[in-house]
Length: 192
Image (tube, rainbow, N blue to C red; front, side, top):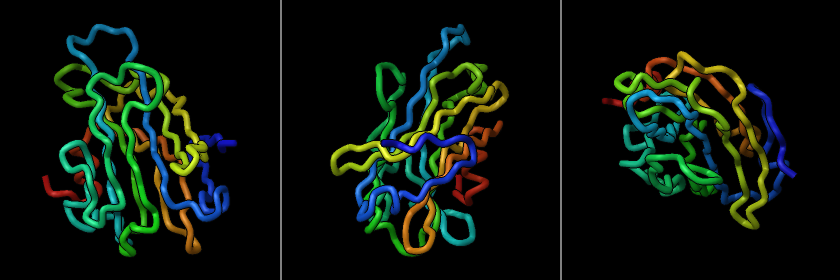
């Protein structure tokens, strides 16, 4: 049974599923019925951070135009430009045993493409969540549903995988930001 997390909640994935190696990180959302002058296009991105809290290199910023990490452990499954339909809108597959040793944390973000131009924000998005599943058997291990009002934010840090005591833990973040993807890139040291 999946652990349901609140903002800031943590779970040891290694304890929940001993021997865990292949995980699926699903991110989902629904756009509310509002007229903002354009369709919603939300994008999931992944930042692979070293001990300094910055990406190891620009190649460690994973998104729809750079789908695979240099070590091959993290693979973005592609961009859903509409978010329509049930289930996860964007998926990232991770092979934990292949994550390069210099990677301390893996951060999962979602941003609204052209949010400022379209006058869109996360207050106009509902049913947002991140879920971690074991690819072997597809059992859901952890889930975090965002339940705050993010009416000023165009970017959300959904959650973070991090190393601890030789295993992997997950933290439900739910931190909102106003600077979109550019803000995350600046924060995590990606050259843009």
